[in-house]
Length: 86
Image 1 (cartoon, rainbow, N blue to C red):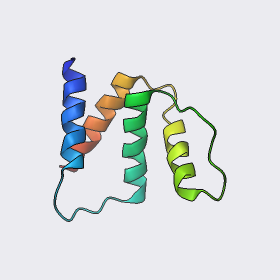
Image 2: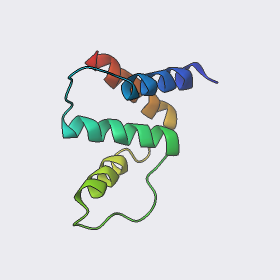
Image 3: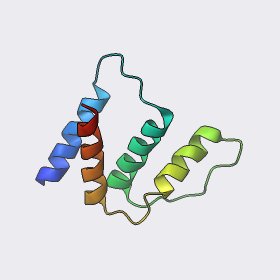
Image 4: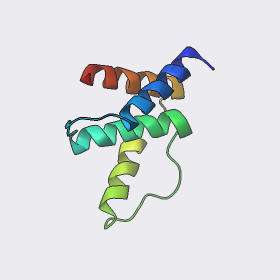
C-alpha cells in the first residue's frame, strides 16, 4: 500500500472516530464527502437525483465538482483539509 493511501485511510479513520463538540458546516461536510468519493470511486457516475431529493442532489453535485481530479490528488486534498482543521 502506498504511503498516501495509508495516510488517507488513517485520516478517514480519525474523522470517523473523532470525539468532541466540533460542528462542521454543511459546506465542509459536502467538501469532505466529495473528496472521499472521488478518492475512493473516481468520477461521479449514475443519474443525478431529482430536484426534491435535496440531500442526495447536493452530495451528487459536490462530487460532480471534483470530476477529473485524480484519486491521489483527492486523497491529498482530503488529508490537507483535515490537517488544517486540527
